[in-house]
Length: 277
Image (cartoon, rainbow, N blue to C red):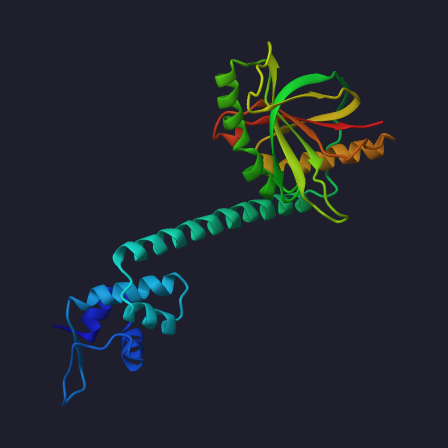
């Protein structure tokens, strides 16, 4: 048998926690010395302790844990519950990481307020272009929302293009539109697209659309991760205002990914195009 201190160390819990579990009847010691009141536990009781800690990590109250232990939840069910909880926590970590990146990008933008370089914006005429595309809904035009919605579309589109025998004929691009909804709805539709060559067979699993020509587009190269793309967007906005133009349509930038080595986001080069008149 193990004293309460040794058992706590083996189970990676505190002595105080074991005393509390004993007090509420959740995990009684195997033996209590009648003269000293000292608690002793067996190695077999580590299994029960592991279950208690696992259920607590799943977010259950101690009262609920007691009920599940009394009902003898089998190991398969417990593994399934823990896997589900792990997936939920991983999703939350990913969401928080994206939100932190967005906050950092906004902070960098605030730190450079009043120092926008508007000298590199180029006014262009963009011809109409036939593209194949996949689309998805997105909660907002924020980078933290766009990335998870847009990024998975490109490998899916490439796979379907290959299956349909459709060849890429230019850099990948993205364009955006407001989602159908009521006033104040921030949601958008993201479109991942490739210019293509040749004919497209029936029912290829993607759309074929013609992106309209932009008679005048204020364009600027964005270098680095797209989490910081709104900084480039704000530079374009300052140029538009300073030069007597106004944005046409919904004001979303069309993005052409000129250089996009996988995973090396600091090396990305993206041309952002905003229709103006």
